[in-house]
Length: 372
Image (cartoon, rainbow, N blue to C red; front, top):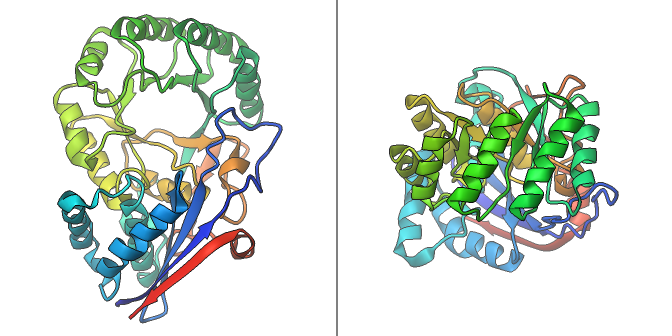
């Protein structure tokens, strides 16, 4: 099996599917690049890639730097290809963090299709569904957080993660209001995406312990390892980190070695694909830690996250970034979440979900193809 064609579609989101009534203050309405690798046996590997801030830059990287490495290769050589990208990156290419991952996903999709297996079965299945928590965006008022949590609780979703908007005093009020609104038994997490001082984080963490929150995520930037180590030492609530840690499993290894997280995070977009995410998850498992898979902000790639989450043991939840309509394009249909709050993995071969090619064509800003 040899890759003979490399295609991309730069898709403008243009808020064409956005739910205007329930969107967060930070819409994250980045464009998306659709990637298709075609092999000489007719099989196709599909992935999507964020075109954050500049689709032209992402498109240029894919065609000028990545396509020449991929064309003519056997997709089964994905581990070698994965390491080659790291070498290319080190030699002054400096890939945007979200670019190599989709290539890896497309390679895995191809190989699972050749094996006629759903991706999670090809990876090695552990389960076929995951419980879901809703992950909201930043809001301007406390009531917006409360109403969002109650909305998804009413739909049967298992938990809610707030991204409190700051400052610290506001975050404390949001945490308290949420616990009062949803009741004492509902799962809550907090991810302030913050720049807290250590003292502020300890204060917030102790409040979250009293309110019985499930975990406390990203109170500092990921490279502030001293602060994370000290926070983990003094708090009982699990501290989650590494969402933006660079260097894939090598970077996360430094966090684990310094006891700077209780839970690590990874996903198939920002952590170098399925290969990178599995390396992080398996390494964490060796230390008795969970690797909670975080959203890619693209429904198609989040379905790839589901496959990975169902192929590992040490991940508890699926992160459901809401409102879903903001992140649906270019996947056809919605995420398969049932009324009991679980998302099920597809039993079709490969990733097993479809893209909306008509909508892609309607919103396509640029199409490029390279062949051998």
